[in-house]
Length: 319
Image 1 (cartoon, rainbow, N blue to C red):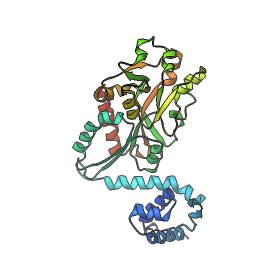
Image 2 (cartoon, helix red, strand yellow; image 1 turned 30 degrees about the vertical axis):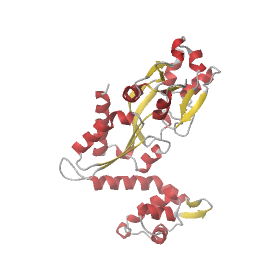
Image 3 (cartoon, helix red, strand yellow; image 1 turned 90 degrees about the vertical axis):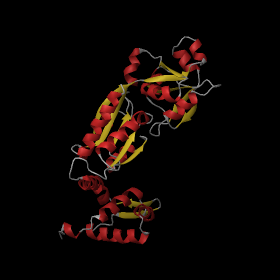
Image 4 (cartoon, helix red, strand yellow; image 1 turned 60 degrees about the horizontal axis):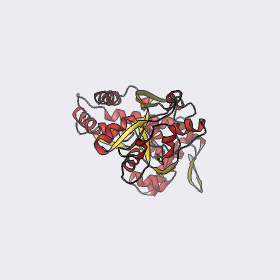
């Protein structure tokens, strides 16, 4: 029997989305700041409304039924549109807007102060949440929890981070192209030698984990030549790897995007950078398109349109 939409408590749909994400009544209750019994009652109402179990118990928690899985994207879109409606205010300077940004660090740090000022000038009392782009950021954009991302992708044809592999419902715009370079101390012994591929591979390397992967385009390029880096230390971020490469009494070097020079001039003035010494034919495979990423549902969202243009303007000012 077809039911009237007016009979549905829309708060139940938010509970349904959280259950799909958490796979647990207790964790969902904690997120909602209610008791588990309240969530269980909501789940019973949802099951009755949709005439489907929605979730089944498994050793790993609640597993969504095929029917629930079929609703996940539509539900995420609907909740995102609902948030946009709630954010609409009269006047030129709406209040109470929230921004959630996933931007690769240290790129975020080079523009964060000015970005916060721009946001607060345009949106009075805006709340801003930032976090480093990571493995879960794309899913967060899809779920509507993150407004926009700014991160490097890869150009290597075998990369899993290629732009053409983004889902069809994700929009993007390339802000700039970067090329990774080598960072090492100004007194590093490599600077007393000819800078070539042999010298580059002679010294121990600091690597970073990128989206849960320890290998990236450089390793693919070296593998094509039957070569590999001597990775002595693996870390979680560019800031960490640059910090360690700047430390005295060790000979480790690291690779990071060229834009990090803005960061190292302030934080690690004893570091200098050199090009990765590979043949020119490999350079295109190492290019990093730094890309603004958002969900198509936000294509006409005034807040997101303003935010994209503001981020772009701040980047061009710093060039």
